[in-house]
Image 1: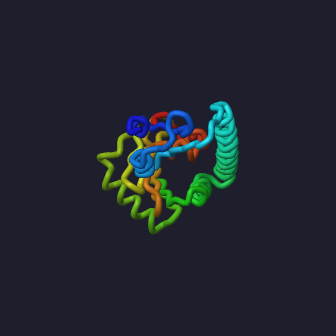
Image 2: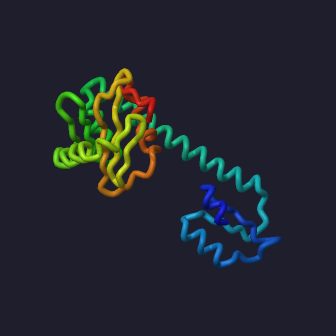
Image 3: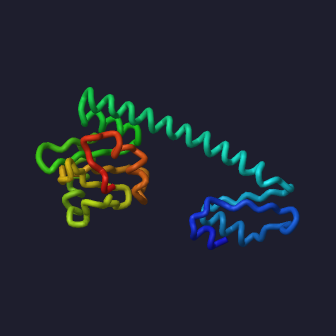
Length: 189
């Protein structure tokens, strides 16, 4: 089972009817320790019945996620066209429960929370040598990305969360910035 966990398998379903009557406690403990879903079936079940229900649930959840993303993107476009980038950033900050700072190379920065924004501005300056144009920079609950317009560095977009740690770039794509703001080129995200 350790190999399954290392390969980021979503979970394991074991039919404890014919070959396995009991699941070893060590296996259950390993699954619990790594938040690895272990589904134990105590009756013979056709594989198609399991997968059909799971697929239905996945499709239903995916549809809901796409509806939320579509609504978010629509609202963001509307606000950006109507009131400009500050309103779009405020909406995004509220929607995602994050602090956001837009720090242009030239001009005045914009912060969704002035106190937190000043802190994020200092962090961008502090980590500037580590922030690469083609990468998203992560530092626990702080994340930043160099924004480009027509292929040239324009400034920084920084995010801070009071209660979440950013682990990878999936967040960046989830919030829809590459497709929502056509003026910002994020092809290198």
